[in-house]
Amino acid sequence: MNRSGQDPIIAYLVLWTAAIVTPLYWIVFFATGNLTPAPTDLGLRFELAFPAADLWMACAAALGAIGLRRGWRIGYPMALAAAGALLYLALMDITFDLENGVYLLERGQVSVEIAINVLCVSGAAVLVYVLLRREPSLTRPSAGAVPDQPRLVTPG
Image (cartoon, rainbow, N blue to C red; front, side, top):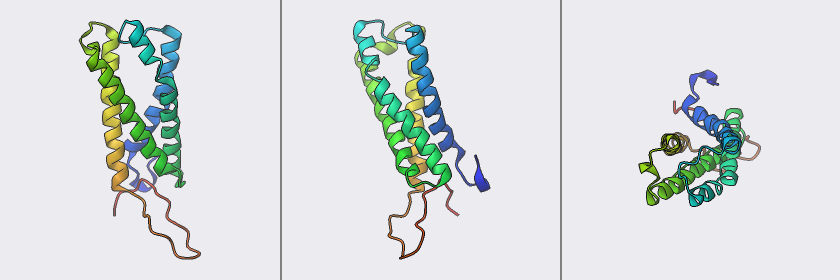
């Protein structure tokens, strides 16, 4: 993945982890029904509100990773969209868990919940940091010039 030694691999790692692990989580969730940290009907109904938004985030992460790697215009905004979705979904989850005492439950699923929350918040922070340091130029290119494609390249 590291073309010319300049691509920040951590951004690709976060994006691909979100794109791959998220659907896997939902496959396990629906196959086992055993990942809900709050053992109540309300907790299950809250959890079931996430698949569509998680799918959006996973797709944005995949498109962001591919687009950034290939220099496509869509890569940068999709990577930022994935970062925003990661943070938003994590904060919704954390707020619910705090308000409903989920973190205090003695269930194995709570450790999975905490790990997901920490990874999503830290992953979003890493992505925002890396992406904003490499913000693409918003200036209009001269006539006939090929505009720069935003890539994850460290400043030289």
